[in-house]
Amino acid sequence: MHYFVYKNDHLYCEDVSVSYVAEQIGTPFYLYSYSTIKRHFRVFEDAFNGLDHLTCFSVKSNSNLAILRLLASEGGGADIVSGGELFRAIKAGIAPDKIVYSGVGKTPEDMELALKSGIFMFNVESNQELQTLDKIAKDIGCKAPIAIRINPDVESKTHPYVVTGASENKFGIQIEDSLSAYALAKRLKHIDVKGISCHIGSQLTEIDPFVEALQKLKELLEALKKMGLDIKFLNLGGGLGITYNDEKPPHPLEYAGALRETMGDNNVTLILEPGRVITGNAGILVTRVLYTKSTKNKRFVIVDAGMNDLIRPALYNSFHAVQPVEMTHSEMLAADLVGPVCETGDFLAKDREMPAFKPGDLVAVMSAGAYSFSMASNYNSRPRPAEVMVKGNLLSVIRSREAYEDLISGETIPEFLE
Ligand SMILES: *Cc1c(COP(=O)(O)O)cnc(C)c1O
Image 1 (cartoon, rainbow, N blue to C red):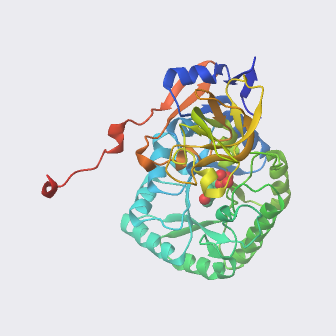
Image 2: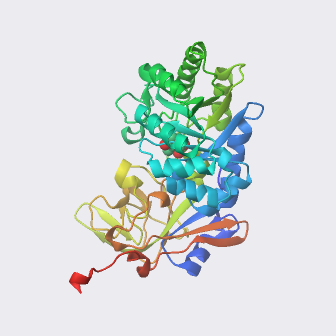
Image 3: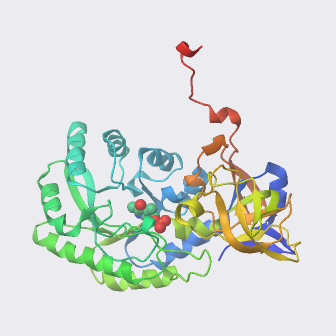
């Protein structure tokens, strides 16, 4: 459920018409619905009512401060993967003791910053990282709270680029090596073992892989108990899928129900790291048609947003629905929706039936709230688009469109070139 709906053939975000936003701030821009984000978070969160749990929003899916602030005010924590995300999460008001830190390549500097900020837990992904963290904690004079991220080797049937929990992926520690990693963690004096974590992939549309992974975490928990380790937290990561096209992902209630059953009765808190399911369908990318042209067997609709603004189609061949902002078209035509970037991979939709767009028309690229702006770049020296949030009839630019000056900020021409 989201709040992007047509009223009298005009696309609205809550109570604001999308074309009004385009008039005010120009194109392209990302448009987020406050009520949709809040609703998605509440539905997810409330599905786990009665079960000890902590929901840590995956900051990499959408890291805008306003969105993080909204989730913080709903009581959400954060799952971060870099020092930059830690900086954002804290700036946005997320309580440090609700922040978990994942990632295979944490730098010593970022680990130190996270320790000093008092984050809840590190999800450690290798023995070397464990030793580095122990040393940093020793220097600071504290103990680093950790879970070890294990790779449960379950099959998750999603795009190969977003599978993370199979044995050929770089993430986590192989489950068969996990006991020795925990033994090492137990020996290290400045490591405080608190949990077990995993994250098996993204855009999963079935429940079974999650249940299977949680079962493996529980088995490991029993083995660790015998080693004398008191594990209080199981972190199942994120990964719950959404509908982009015709996918039928489980509802959060079903997901939570299955996990509740698998957890059973124990004194363990479940940590969840949802990203896409919270923000994916709470944002759209709005772009304007510049030109259309046809070759012998293809029609192209060229718009002012490209792969630098939204890379998912180019990177994963992802599907994003394409909709008119004004429903004035009587005819549908097969076309590619492409951007201005000088790459053949620069498309937003391929071989798609879409309204017979004309120059000047506004186009909404749907389901662009996750892994969209957060993956945007300046390729082709294109300023990144504005981000706008609507709440009811209120509209706020939550990130201004970059200017040409922003493109060169930090660059210098050395003296020997003057
Ligand atoms: C990306 C990521 C998530 C979020 O995944 P979604 O599919 O967006 O829910 C959670 N945890 C970790 C460790 C991640 O890398």
